[in-house]
Image 1 (cartoon, rainbow, N blue to C red):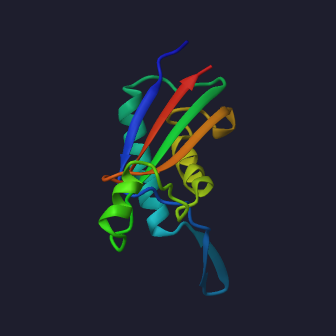
Image 2: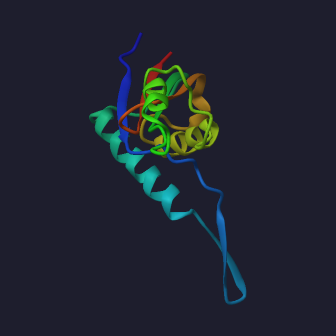
Length: 140
Protein backbone atom coordinates (compact mmCIF):
# COMPACT_ATOMS: atom_id res chain seq x y z
CA UNK A 1 0.00 0.00 0.00
CA UNK A 2 1.20 3.52 -0.79
CA UNK A 3 2.67 5.82 1.82
CA UNK A 4 0.09 8.08 3.44
CA UNK A 5 0.07 11.84 2.97
CA UNK A 6 -0.47 13.33 6.42
CA UNK A 7 -0.70 16.95 7.50
CA UNK A 8 -2.01 19.12 10.32
CA UNK A 9 -4.13 22.23 9.78
CA UNK A 10 -3.59 24.46 12.83
CA UNK A 11 -6.42 26.41 14.44
CA UNK A 12 -10.12 25.84 14.88
CA UNK A 13 -11.61 23.75 12.03
CA UNK A 14 -13.78 25.99 9.82
CA UNK A 15 -17.03 24.86 8.20
CA UNK A 16 -17.32 25.77 4.52
CA UNK A 17 -19.60 28.79 4.34
CA UNK A 18 -22.37 29.16 1.81
CA UNK A 19 -21.55 31.38 -1.16
CA UNK A 20 -22.48 35.03 -0.67
CA UNK A 21 -24.08 37.23 -3.30
CA UNK A 22 -23.46 40.92 -3.91
CA UNK A 23 -25.14 43.32 -6.30
CA UNK A 24 -22.68 45.26 -8.48
CA UNK A 25 -24.78 47.70 -10.47
CA UNK A 26 -27.04 45.56 -12.68
CA UNK A 27 -25.05 42.40 -11.98
CA UNK A 28 -24.99 39.93 -9.11
CA UNK A 29 -21.64 38.35 -8.26
CA UNK A 30 -20.93 35.34 -6.08
CA UNK A 31 -18.05 35.17 -3.62
CA UNK A 32 -16.75 32.84 -0.93
CA UNK A 33 -16.92 34.14 2.66
CA UNK A 34 -13.53 35.42 3.90
CA UNK A 35 -13.28 32.92 6.78
CA UNK A 36 -13.86 29.99 4.40
CA UNK A 37 -11.41 31.32 1.79
CA UNK A 38 -8.59 31.86 4.30
CA UNK A 39 -9.10 28.39 5.86
CA UNK A 40 -9.08 26.73 2.42
CA UNK A 41 -5.85 28.62 1.58
CA UNK A 42 -4.28 27.33 4.82
CA UNK A 43 -5.33 23.76 3.90
CA UNK A 44 -3.77 24.20 0.43
CA UNK A 45 -0.46 25.38 1.93
CA UNK A 46 -0.31 22.47 4.40
CA UNK A 47 -1.33 19.94 1.71
CA UNK A 48 1.36 21.22 -0.68
CA UNK A 49 3.98 20.95 2.09
CA UNK A 50 2.88 17.36 2.82
CA UNK A 51 3.01 16.36 -0.86
CA UNK A 52 6.75 17.26 -0.99
CA UNK A 53 6.67 17.61 -4.76
CA UNK A 54 4.85 14.31 -5.39
CA UNK A 55 2.35 14.25 -8.25
CA UNK A 56 -1.39 14.23 -7.54
CA UNK A 57 -3.04 10.89 -6.82
CA UNK A 58 -5.22 9.83 -9.72
CA UNK A 59 -6.91 6.72 -8.29
CA UNK A 60 -9.19 5.87 -5.37
CA UNK A 61 -8.20 7.16 -1.92
CA UNK A 62 -9.07 6.53 1.71
CA UNK A 63 -9.22 9.62 3.95
CA UNK A 64 -9.07 9.86 7.73
CA UNK A 65 -9.71 13.21 9.39
CA UNK A 66 -9.59 14.16 13.04
CA UNK A 67 -11.17 17.48 14.01
CA UNK A 68 -9.87 18.72 17.37
CA UNK A 69 -11.90 21.48 19.06
CA UNK A 70 -11.37 23.28 22.38
CA UNK A 71 -13.88 22.79 25.22
CA UNK A 72 -15.85 25.97 26.03
CA UNK A 73 -14.09 28.26 28.53
CA UNK A 74 -17.44 28.72 30.29
CA UNK A 75 -17.42 25.06 31.38
CA UNK A 76 -16.28 24.09 34.88
CA UNK A 77 -12.75 22.70 35.28
CA UNK A 78 -14.26 19.27 35.96
CA UNK A 79 -16.35 19.34 32.79
CA UNK A 80 -13.35 20.54 30.74
CA UNK A 81 -11.26 17.64 32.12
CA UNK A 82 -14.04 15.22 31.16
CA UNK A 83 -14.10 16.70 27.65
CA UNK A 84 -10.32 16.41 27.28
CA UNK A 85 -10.44 12.77 28.42
CA UNK A 86 -13.19 12.14 25.82
CA UNK A 87 -15.88 11.33 28.40
CA UNK A 88 -17.84 14.21 26.81
CA UNK A 89 -17.91 14.45 23.02
CA UNK A 90 -18.36 17.67 21.02
CA UNK A 91 -21.85 17.95 19.55
CA UNK A 92 -21.55 21.66 18.78
CA UNK A 93 -20.44 23.51 15.66
CA UNK A 94 -18.64 23.18 13.37
CA UNK A 95 -20.60 20.46 11.55
CA UNK A 96 -18.18 17.76 10.40
CA UNK A 97 -19.71 17.51 6.91
CA UNK A 98 -19.23 21.21 6.21
CA UNK A 99 -15.62 21.15 7.46
CA UNK A 100 -14.89 18.12 5.27
CA UNK A 101 -16.29 19.91 2.21
CA UNK A 102 -13.86 22.80 2.67
CA UNK A 103 -10.87 20.52 3.31
CA UNK A 104 -11.73 18.29 0.32
CA UNK A 105 -12.22 21.24 -2.05
CA UNK A 106 -8.88 22.72 -0.97
CA UNK A 107 -7.06 19.43 -1.71
CA UNK A 108 -8.31 19.28 -5.33
CA UNK A 109 -5.42 19.45 -7.83
CA UNK A 110 -2.91 19.28 -4.92
CA UNK A 111 -3.36 15.88 -3.25
CA UNK A 112 -5.79 14.35 -5.76
CA UNK A 113 -7.29 15.39 -9.07
CA UNK A 114 -10.80 15.66 -7.62
CA UNK A 115 -12.47 14.87 -4.29
CA UNK A 116 -14.76 12.34 -6.01
CA UNK A 117 -11.76 9.97 -5.74
CA UNK A 118 -12.42 9.57 -1.99
CA UNK A 119 -14.07 6.17 -1.59
CA UNK A 120 -13.41 5.59 2.13
CA UNK A 121 -13.82 8.35 4.71
CA UNK A 122 -13.42 8.29 8.49
CA UNK A 123 -14.07 11.49 10.44
CA UNK A 124 -13.83 12.02 14.17
CA UNK A 125 -14.44 15.20 16.19
CA UNK A 126 -13.00 15.35 19.70
CA UNK A 127 -12.02 17.90 22.34
CA UNK A 128 -8.36 18.82 22.78
CA UNK A 129 -6.28 21.58 24.37
CA UNK A 130 -5.15 22.74 20.91
CA UNK A 131 -7.63 23.20 18.04
CA UNK A 132 -6.54 21.66 14.74
CA UNK A 133 -7.47 19.18 12.03
CA UNK A 134 -5.34 16.18 11.14
CA UNK A 135 -5.71 14.78 7.62
CA UNK A 136 -4.39 11.47 6.29
CA UNK A 137 -4.86 10.44 2.65
CA UNK A 138 -3.86 7.00 1.39
CA UNK A 139 -4.00 5.78 -2.21
CA UNK A 140 -5.91 2.48 -2.53
